[in-house]
Image (cartoon, rainbow, N blue to C red; front, side, top):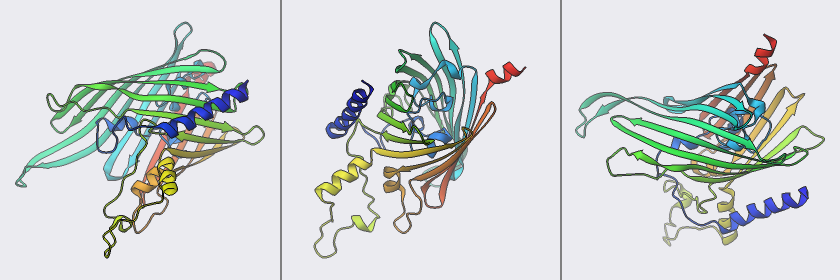
Amino acid sequence: MHKILRKTILIFVFGCLVTMQVIAQIGGYGTYKFLGYTNSARIAAMGGSFLAINDNDITLTQANPSLITPAMSNNLAMSYVNSPGGINYGFVMYSYSFSKVGSFVGSLQYMNYGNFTGADASGNLTGDFSASEYALNIGWGRQLSSLFSIGANGKLIYSQLETYRSFGIAVDVAGTYTSKDQTFTASVIGRNIGTQIVPYVAGQYQPLPFELQIGLSQKLKHIPLRFSQLLTNLQRWDLTYLDPSDPANSPDPITGEVKEKSGIGKFADGLMRHIVLGAEVTIAKAFSIRIGYNYQRRQELKLTSKSGLTGFSIGAGLRVKMFNLSYTYASYTAGLPRNYITVAVNLQEFVKKQ
């Protein structure tokens, strides 16, 4: 039965990849893009913006609310991301469970773009200003059976960019299947379904960064190794961006033609832009090493002269009694990494010891 269900899920995933149509906009379109940023160090280490791993890690629930469980009740977590250019972001979150209605996670997600010096069209200084965005999230999760769970996040969003301000609301919905032996997990997620209530400019409403995602993870039975495969932006097939400054995209100086990939090469490139790969090995249930590869990130952000480790990420996790500490180094562009630090505390264990 479980083998048949796993095959059904894999067939469903393949069908999504083959039949995807352009029904949403990405790239430079839309607003509140910070909602899709990776906050958790563990998620960042495995290359993506979410994970399908059902092991009671509260830091995974902001992106995948169907992973919220009673076991993480009274857990507290904080995350901080240091990004190039003085941009900092992260979250603080807390979980509590109620026997009759389910388990909840409340979190505050923030994005601080720093301070800027303003000037008018003539170059005259107009003073300093700041820019920041916030989302207050309330997540709910419930176990439908020993194999299936569901969850949802409700979001209140506030954005302040210089003198422009905006309010919005959104929800995430998710469902997760976990095999009976706890080795295989699959999640389906619809993120950032919502709208602006108050736009930056009166009457000019912008779409939110909606995304349809599928996550798969497989843990080996006799080796402490887990593989993760994430399928992102399933609402749109073509994620290709051609950098006009890349010599490979320049027309031939003699014929004027632009060299294009073959049909198979083009399809493979388009397919890989939806796939994020990751792996995690755990030693003695206390120390973890993680690695991830994001093909789309590498193709979009690598430098023409130097690719480096763009698209790769590596991290580690350490569990000591009631504390869980994670760190990740992720290369977005050569020489401009992001550093992720996440700390989770099981306050229930602390109460027991008291």
